[in-house]
Amino acid sequence: MEWFNAPELWLGRTVFQRGLAVLYCVAFLSAALQFRALIGERGMLPVPEYLRRTTPLRTPSLFHWHYSDRFFATVAWTGFAGAAALAAGAGDAVPLAVAMLLWLLLWGLYLSIVNVGQTWYAFGWESLLLETGFLAVFLGNDDVAPPLLVLLLLRWLLFRVEFGAGLIKIRGDACWRELTCLCHHHETQPMPGPLSWFFHRLPRPLHRVEAAANHVVQLGVPFLLFAPQPVATIAAALMIVTQLWLVLSGNFAWLNWLTIVLAAAALDLSSLTGDHPRPDPPLWYAALVLAVTALVLVRSYRPVRNLLSRHQSMNRSYDPFHLVNTYGAFGTVGRVRDEIVVEGTSDPEPGPDTEWRAYAFKGKPGDPRRLPRQFAPYHLRLDWLMWFAALSPGYAREWFGPFVERLLAGDRDTLRLLARNPFPDAPPVHVRARLYRYRFSTWRELRTTGAWWQRRLLREYLPPVRLRG
Image (tube, rainbow, N blue to C red; front, side, top):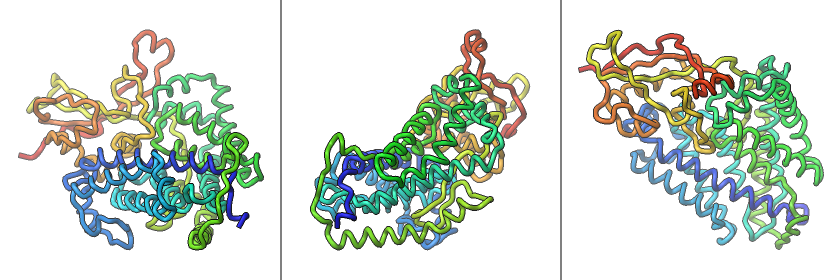
């Protein structure tokens, strides 16, 4: 079965598996530390209420069998522990079947979380982690050589991630075709990082080079993943470099790191380490790999049709198990940045002289003098949804009211999602929200004021409200 094995990609598989396990750790940690305020029993979008509106066939999840905050925490922390063990090499220390069950456990636990996560988990990188995690189940461990078919399926996934993103850009906003989108993107992206200000201030010709390079890597290079080595390795390396550029320029949860991990699986590093030949795989394992390959190819029909469509969807899953999905990013780039500033007061009757104190978020811009922080690959779900809420109140219809209500009640779990609570002794009597237009400061403004952002008030987003009674 020489055709079945790819021993020269042994190190690439190892890097992929350890990297994926680390990202699973991050995902489960994000779930464990944030779920109570977001989807817990007393959260903004409670899981028990959601489960009453859906079925196990539509949203397969352990929580259809039982839900409590304690059980959710057990699921999340079990996933974290299992992922940490795999990141430490446990998958290579156990028999092949046991290693596969460990990877399957992580996939099943995270699927259970995503399928009840509602708006808070409606991001493309959730489906990407699940699809990648499903394929990882069949990648084997040190008992067998890397199976070529699964490695090709991982390249097919990476192709869809990159090529889908490239197509939606070139079909979407005209600024991508004019090579000007990156004159705005670093400033208007959902959650800037500590270097985003510097990226935004690069000369305009360099922004055009950035955009052109993006088109080359996303629209041309992905086809080279299926070329013979070393061409496939060069293509994967180019993708890794561009993804590291994105890591430096912003916060996109684990999207960029997971793309890097996928690209690592295509790297042929045998010239450095030599081949690692293994005996032929067990017959049951080879049969499973062949079955999964056939399944993915059949399920790829709708994602391929989406890629070829003029009306391409950006991120979409075609089945409740997130097995084969379609991906894309930033088909439209904003030209301006609006931010919601949430404030409270202890004044029982707000007036012109009322002192309003602002809540500080961990990641999203607020205080103009505060340099954006680096959080990725950790995912700040509330901060991301606040960016969408600023684009349109429709994105926040389900959860913004419950969020404000919990600030008025001084809910401990909600306050833990924030960087600073300006009412440490007692919750405010009134809370309001106002919409500001933000832009990065110029070099001169930064030197003069020490502020990374300049802002001006646009309008009231939510008038002062208080709890009834």
